[in-house]
Image 1 (cartoon, one colour):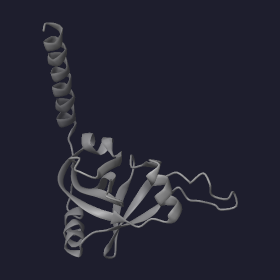
Image 2 (image 1 turned 90 degrees about the horizontal axis):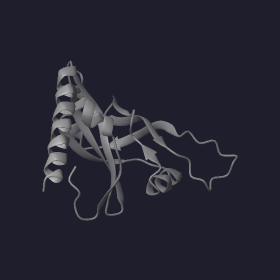
Image 3 (image 1 turned 90 degrees about the vertical axis):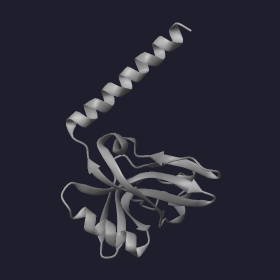
Image 4 (image 1 turned 180 degrees about the vertical axis):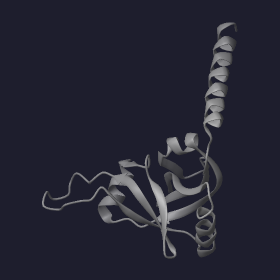
Length: 155
């Protein structure tokens, strides 16, 4: 995701960018409670093992971890991992639902970020990478790193 003016990235699903090929991405809003918003504003969120399910005409994030706000009363029991509703346009939801039923496609959250004062989420339609594609990415990274080291050494 390109960083634009008045956008700050809260968390990114780094594993998704390595394990999946991103076909298409969408920007949506998330439905949060008060303590979740405060926790996210302090960067206490994690998307690492999260995924998206479609229930009816709505998208829900599963396994997104949002830490409990420290100032909450001890008597309140907070579920830090729960379903969070994602708002997208209806035509996008219908398209994603159809594609997710095809073999090899999934829907996952890619990043959570601020846009002005709003908390937005980037949702991606992805395809699982094969093992040889991942190895090629690692090989390209190491070759680029070695080239950069060699170039800086002899300058």
